[in-house]
Image 1 (cartoon, rainbow over the protein chains, first blue to last red):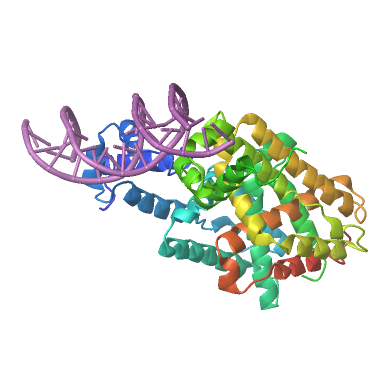
Image 2: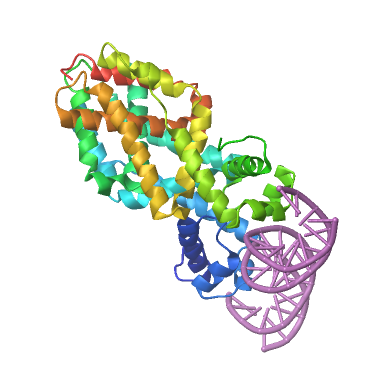
Length: 192
Length: 192
DNA sequence: GTCTATACACAGATAGAC
DNA sequence: GTCTATCTGTGTATAGAC
């Protein structure tokens, strides 16, 4: 009920989200948003009393939520290697878009409020829990599970940074599976 | 000869570098730079004919170069585990500052020219070469060496993202050594 | 080389008509 | 709800005096 589509409010939000992602918050003007959304600035201020800053708040919240992945097809793996392979492949889907959003959130972090940063931290903690819940099926030591799960997340974030956003994937002809393979090889058959 | 310190030009550059890092390029005005540098905007335009954009070009180049690490104390390790431990500890030094710069470069990437992006890519390729040169002392397969080296770099970048810039290090009471340990444990005694 | 003074475009934001 | 019109501040940039 809350999300009736195609009303102007949603169009403005979508437009702002797109422009913020492309050019950054500070470099995007309300004028530009209005033009792209097919309305005037006054219309924006009718729907969003706090103006541009309110747009950022809402867009940031949505963007962060959209980063959450369900990890559906990663569940119920038969081994740690199997899990990491599934996990990697699941994250590889739609990675360009996700990488762009990761870059944006990271870029605008200094603009966020304490609460928004805390929310983003919680999203990572929740994501980590999801990963750890699968990992602990194969590793006994709790601390080991925690750390390995963070390692997987860090590796994925770093990959997004260098290989996707910086364009190294195209330059080196790499695919995520290359990184997955070395991870699984490292983690198999060594007591973990 | 080229870097005579304390002339106004250098003061302006240092100030711009600091403000760009703190608030981002778009959100930093030439007026603000001038005030912080203790001069007027006209002085900036005397030293930098292309104005703000020229400041960005120079600052970006310096920032990127400053990201390069020599890997001095990581050389000549006695085993792969030893290397990774040294590598991690070496990068852990001054990580707050480096993480901030990494975030900034990533954030401003869309503003950079083709050449500047290519330069940044080359820096990563060079860094990867340095890492690979050490790793290949312990692993035979060339592809394996390549991938493992990238994994180490990605893990480090991801750590910087979540644990330092997002503040998870303080929140979870983590230190880089926790991630190093799980990496070395994974890579020891499994044929790699 | 650094200043004062200023040009001029564009920023975010609002009042009031329809 | 959306518009036109407009306010006021700030942005980049430059001319010309010292």
